[in-house]
Length: 148
Image 1 (cartoon, one colour):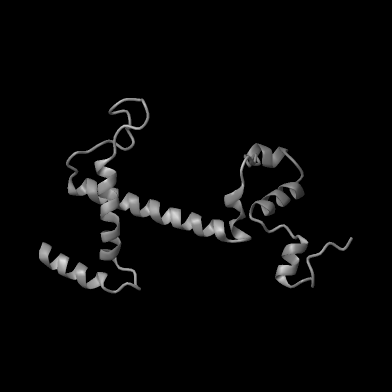
Image 2 (cartoon, helix red, strand yellow; image 1 turned 180 degrees about the vertical axis):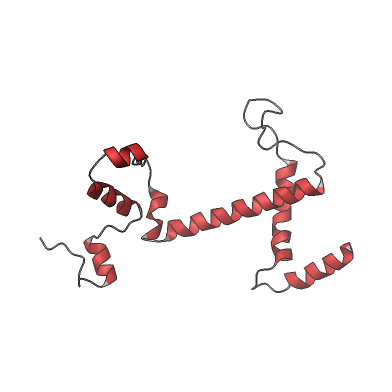
C-alpha cells in the first residue's frame, strides 16, 4: 500500500504548475518534522514549560496528521495576510499600529455618540468613507486633487 502511495506521489510531483495534495504534503512534511524535533524549551522558563507546543519524541500518526493540518492552516493564513498587506486600498488594515479601536458594545452603540458618527466609524474601518481619492477611483470625479 505504501509503495502505491509513493509511486502516485512521484507522478504527481512531476507536474509543477498545478496544486496537488501529495505535493503539498511533500512540502509540509519537512516543516512538521522540524517542528516535532525542535519543539522544546524557549527562553529561560525551563524544560517542559512550553505547554502549547510540547516535545513529543515519537509522535503517533494522529499527532503527525494534526500537526500537518495545523501547519497547513498557519501557512495559508500567513499567505493571506501577506497578500492582503500588498493591496493598496483593501490591505490598509494590516498596517494599523497603535490605533485605539472604537468600542462597539451595545451600551456604547445605544447610548454613545450620534448614529452618523457610528456610521462614519464603521465606514472608515472598512475603508469606504467617500473621499476624493475613492470618488476618483470610482470614476465619479475626474481628479482626486482638492478643489481648494
